[in-house]
Amino acid sequence: MLPRSQLAPHALAQWARDRPDQVAVVRVDNGAAVTYHDLHDRVLRWAAAYQRLGVHAGSHVATMIPNSAEAYIAWLGLGWLQAVEVPLNNGYTGKMLQYTLSQSDSTMLVIHRRFVDRLASIAAELPQLERVVVLDDPVGDEQPNSDATTVFDIATLPFDVSTQHDFLDGVAPAEGLAGPEYRDITAIIYTSGTTGPSKGVILPWAGMVNMWSWAPAETFGVGEALYGAFPSFHVSGKSVFNGVMVRGGKLVYREKFSATHFWDDVRRANCVSAGLVGPMTALLWAQPNRDDDADNPLRNVLLGPMIPEMEAFEKRFDLKVGTCYGMTEIGASFCVGFEPKPWQTCGKERTDYPWHEVRLVDDNDEEVPIGDVGELMLRTPEPWALNVGYYKMPEKTAEAWRNGWFHTGDAFRRDADGWYYFVDRMKDSIRRRGENISSFEVENFVIEHPQVADCAAIGVPAQFGEDEVMVVCVVTDRDKFSPRALIDWLEPRMPKFMLPRYVDVMDDLPRNQTSMRVLKFELRTRGVTDTTWDRDA
Image (tube, rainbow, N blue to C red):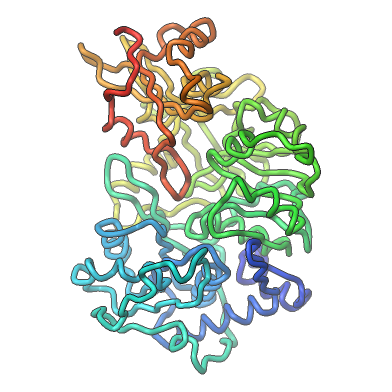
């Protein structure tokens, strides 16, 4: 059984008693800081305010709040009531916003004023939404007076609308609340759909603990600062916050990640650790070298995926790197700390909580030999440590959980030393002339070219069926970059059947703003254009 001390609400309460004046969270760009005592006090006040509006155990309350202390307070206030948060991506608008609010059966929405005008066009399609609380503090506004939504008349909304002042007015911190157990549901988090509607992952508190609990003990300690470059509405941001609360650290954040400000941020806040996802690592590496690159307080960075220059990155910035593989549904199943490792790996099987049992399997769920590619499926002996299904999607739940194992949809291979390597999304593979090609492996070759800053490989329809390989690149200098030269450079380095036929250049790749994953379906839809270079032309 997972102890309550591992859950953020209870951990925060303990540190509020033991170290009340220690800073718990700080927004680095304006210095706004909240102590453990004040954070806990505000959480309990929000819990009482929720109670006053009828929120109870099992209630579904949606939130749309920029990265801020309020985002975590709103979540933990619900946690104390054993209610369920539905954290919404701040980018949702229109049909996507309507779908997630409706599909999640949210009866209440806590939303920042900058987003509230988005409700106007969909209000008539939200019959189950009873109450809206509008936050009007500039919790995340970079330019609070420039946002047109600040003048939106909330009185025109057909809901019971409360301002933040009304919501909290006259409310004292709640007392006598039992708070959550590890088996209680903390959130329904929507994963981005590619071939169908987004699925709401039902996540217990234990699952939230799972995602970040792999972090080595030396990552940071009591009173030390971790820079968390994650959105608070995503499992990455929530699990990091949970991990910081459990260890009695300090979470440092800004609303949106900035590679330009990153090193100034960590120096200003004296961060000893940082968390990065997606292309953030590559963006930091691509910045011009400075004489003081190594003059920073970071001991380590937890990130994923790693980049080819990982060893040089560690030397340049004088730190150690750890990595893991994870997803909302399963937490982190593979990880590796600060010891030497191949840059392509996601790590090895965990030997700590929740002791995932993993297999790489074929289409019949039969284990593939070492070195072969198979789909990752897993389970754990610990109850409630993984997702408990997709909300109101029994068929999708059954499909993912078939044969008693959760099927991730991700293809991996394992070497004889136990290192696991992500190969591709099962649906992102490319089939060319009878060969199955991993887009991830194509990208690994292309990204090593000195003029390529980022890239995505996709399959585009071939004239006689199957696919041709196309790479879309972000380059350091368009004027100096030559697709022909790229192919000449790749030809001796990669199998011929993987060699791209098409090369295109974009200023940036389309990305999911939650996880920064490249939206390959958009690139496939775009396909071959007038700007695309064709090797066979």
